[in-house]
Amino acid sequence: MKRTTSALAVLAAATLTLTACGGGGDDSTAAAGGEGLAPDQSERCTEDRAGGTITVGEFSMLPSFAPGQGQYGVRGGAQSAAVYDRLMVWNPEAEEFEPKLAESLESNDDNTVWTLTLRDGVTFSNGDPLTAEDVAFTVGLHKDPATRSVAMTEAMEITEARVVDPLTVEFTLADPWAGFPITLAGTVGEVIPRDAYEAADPQEWASNPIGAGAFTVADFTPDQETVLEPNPEYYGGPVCPTLRFIRIPGSQGTYDAFQTGEVQVGFLRGAKFVNMAQDDEVRGFEEIISSGSVINMNSGKAGYDGVLTDVRARQAVAAALDRDLWNQRLYNGEGQATSALVADSSRLYDGQEGPAYDVEAARALVEEVKADTPDWDGTLRMLIGDGPENIEAGVVAKALLDAAGFTVVIDNAPVSQVTARQFTGDYEIVIGGLATSDADPAAAFASGMLPTGATNITGIDDPELTAAINDLKAAADLDAQKEALTRLQEVFNEVQPFTVMANAEQYVTVSDTVGGLTPTLSSTVLYDGAFVTE
Image 1 (cartoon, rainbow, N blue to C red):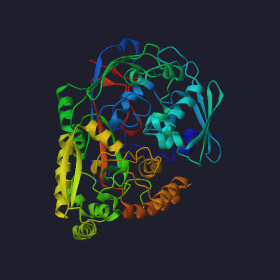
Image 2 (tube, rainbow, N blue to C red):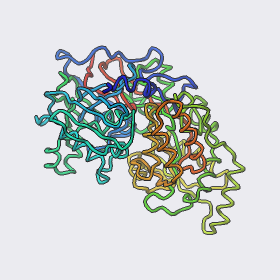
Image 3 (spheres, rainbow, N blue to C red):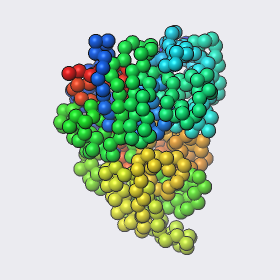
């Protein structure tokens, strides 16, 4: 049997050093923050530090405490993790996965069977013990399409979650997967108590859940505010502060609120704002994400049958976009403009290239499609979030696409509505991004591009693309993964379900008055050890 930490130390070494639609040139910055800006993680909450409130400015609020909604920090992952906790966590400093609600996680020799042992004595906030039955039940929830879990694709890789005894679960996978612990370090690892969940009204649960985490929900106002109070029965020891999460549209507004002290922790996205904070020597946790800034094109989601079902129209969009100009206009040239699936700082990068900017080729493709589709006049409807940087990005994209013969009509909506409409296919073209991890980039690509993928918001269903993704997932070592990624990039350039604009940079700013925060996957910060200082 292999310990998780040793099995994944090499595989997952760069998980939280991805790269940015934000900035930083070609240098990778660890999740610990910029040079010398890492918040101290050596101290935690103690009983004499109890009290105080930490107000957090979110990029996008957690839409609901229903299972499977809190995978990413950019979408309220910290709120979900604070209430539910997680079976495993990624430690960016040690560059390995570590048990949290779990006591251990071990694999067999070919990584097809994983055995999880739970901590003894952990209880949910209602006093019920956390058991292996609850873990198996939670996996089943994520596999159920009705749950609409953002981690359904990863959960579907588990063919069986067998309860061995009250504290042991054996996971059998459909295929070998050395990166499997990433599943339990995300929202699938947020264990749902079976008895309490089945007895609850789903709508009530979505706003007032029961978890094993350090906090309980005191107030939940969707898309506005979430207030969490310390859980006095938390297995991890004393919990100090009250947490207040608020939505502030746009990173500029969040950073302004951070500087004035309205918020003590702020989620920033984009090179301009990350560099601004780092230039001001603000402490924080940074993450760089391959394919973090993309333009999604609806190729059949929810029955869409418009022009983007024609691959030539999607190829025209990809060719029409000048990513260097995008970088200059949005990030003052400080971002990492690219059309490739992975950043050149990725451990899997091997010279892969995305589609080139070629406005003349784009115009020719648009004219071809117009000639073959007489009832299409070149119009594309672009859905844009209401944050200032989103609006600016939409204006730049419209200008570039219009120059190639498209006529783009912009539809502005609140970020929460944009997120919801993407998942229901109620859009034609929209700016978004992937949450790709170098620990296992195949997981994000599978979720975003396989026909059954939980985050496949474009509706793409292409056999060659599916085969290329499955080959990447099956690759056994780094050289094989690079080769498989090169093939995937080639197929992707032809199919173009979305087009990559840049890597994305995220930075969680932390006030000098706050201690005990811990970064983990996908810019999610854990608050179980948090405390407020004078």
